[in-house]
Structures are given as structure tokens and as C-alpha cells.
Length: 400
Image (cartoon, rainbow, N blue to C red; front, side, top):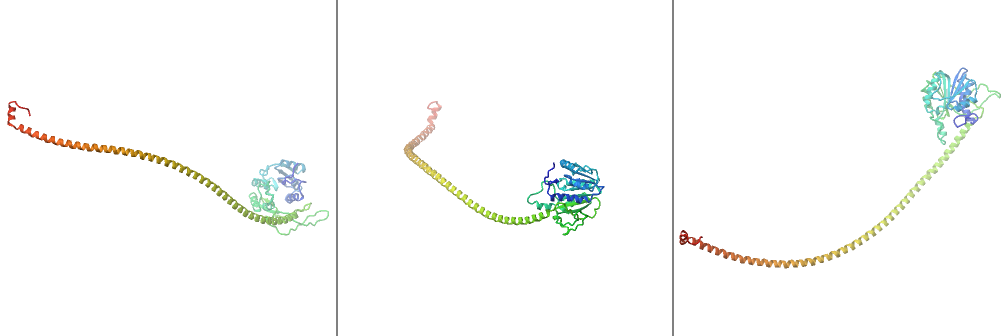
């Protein structure tokens, strides 16, 4: 059993608006299928679209990445001209130029390698065939999903210009259409519908306002693409809902603006309050730091006063000790000086005695020298005596 996850449409499990939105694309594409056409439905899902195309084409092949979806489609639509399988969109298991019509609705935005898929679609399409592909308008749904956030199933969403340019990389001819929900009135026979004419007022509209983009691509020149209007069996209330949603969004924006204004005022006042609180907290911190510093200084002063007192006591004791030492030293030095004075007096007396002795000995030496000179003179006189000389000749007398 395939369940509706918010992306894959399951018949009977979605509301009428969503069902008609998807089925309308296949009704549009059905106009490009003829009884001899071989059609490929890429990302066929539960197979309802392939069944729609099978009413106009010779053969329809639908494939989906999910084996469960392909199995569900096979069981739900057991038609002779339909076949379902599971395969990857960026590597199509078909020969080149095999199909007259290739469709891929709400598939390309799910593919990480969407460029490979475009080239694969171009490869399997016949030269005169048509490739019809749809995708949500990123700008439109970005606004509508402002509160819910991005679609978690989408790998890459497109704006009109980007979508057109990417398709041109694979196809020479590309025509871009918009799919929108519109209010309309239908005039029809009571029993059956006949071929219908459509009148669409209001102009083409802008790409930015489109709900979805549908592109028709071909290797050959495209025919004139006429507008197409699909009138479902179930009533289309989505347009009314959108208008109501827009009104609610306007009211919501106004309410948000008022809320934002109040928040701005609140934040401003809160900022001022926080600034004042910070100022008060800073003053408290400064006061605490000042008080702590005062206590620290008081303790420091007490420690220094105690240290000074201890130092004074130490200096007093040292001064007393030094005074006692000075007194003792003075007494010792006085005694030593007195002793040295006595010794000096004795030395002076000895010096006087030595000087007297020296004078006495000098006088004696002088007397001895005078006596020696006298004796020398007497000796010289004796030597000169002729009597002494005669005695020497005779060997008599002293030897001088």
C-alpha cells in the first residue's frame, strides 16, 4: 500500500484541489498524444497520469524510482496499453529517439542530477516529439512557505529564467507556460459537455506570480501553444483559499509589524534597563573592589606597623648592644692607650739613654782617634829615627 507523504499523489488520499492540480497537467499533455504515439511518463508515481494519457496514446510506459509506486500503479491500472517499471530518471533504460511524447511532472526539482535528466529526455525523444516538464515556481512557493520552511524533498527549485535556460541546453525549441488556479464560470449543456471555447481575461500575468511552470520542448519547431483551461468535477476552492490566505497574511503582517514595533520598544527599553543594570552592577563591583582594597590596605598597614614595631625593638636591642660594645671598646682602648703611653715613655727614656751612650761613645771614639793619630805620629817619627834604621841593619831593635 502506497501512502501519501506530501509529495506523491495517491488517489483517494489527497484533497480535491491537489488532485485536480496534478491531473490537469496530464489533461494538458494529452492534447500532444495521438493514437499512434509512444509515450513515456517519467516519475509516474501511482499511475493515474499514465492512465489519463493512455486514453489518447497507443502505448504509455510509466516508470518511477520507487518499486512500491510502480507495483501500485500496475495493480491499480491494469490496462493493455500501459506498462509500469522502476528506474532512475537520470539514466533512462531506453534507446535513442524512442518516444513521441515524454512527460515529467513535478519530478525535476527532486533530482540532484537534473541536467543529466534533461539530456536523457532529449536523447530518447524523437526529432518531432515533445517533452513536457513542470516544476514549482521557486519565488511563489518561497513566499507561501515562509513559515514552514523549504520543502525537504526538493533538491533544486527553479525560477522562470533559470528553468528556461537549463531546458535550452537539451532542446532547440522551448516554450514556457504558467499553471495557475483561476476563478471561472462554465456554460455547458445539462446532460453532456460539448467541445468548449475559453476566454481568459486579465492578460498573461507575470512569471513571478505563476504557481507552476510547464515547458514544452522539442528538437523541431513548436506549433502555436494555446492556453488551456481545465474544469474539474470537484469545485476548485483553492483560489478562494488563496485570497483568504492573502488577507490573513496581510493581517498577519500588520499584527507582526505591531508585534515587531512592540518588540523593538521592549528591546530598546530592555537594552536601557540592561545598561542601567550593568552600570549598577559595575558600581557594586567597584564598591566591592574598593571595600576589598580598603580591607587589604588596612591589613597591609597593620602588617607594616607590626613590622616597624619589631624593627624598632630590634634596632633598640641592637643599639643597646652596640652601646655596650662601644663602652667596652672605649675602656679597652683607653687601657691599651695608657699601656702604649707607658711603653712609649719607656722607649723615649731608652732613646735618651741610647743618645747619651752614643754621645759618650762618640767622645771616646774621638779621644781614641786622637790617641791613634798621636801614636801614629810617634811611630812615624820612630821609623824615621837613624838609630832605629841602624839597629835594623844590625838585626837589633823591634820590627816596626
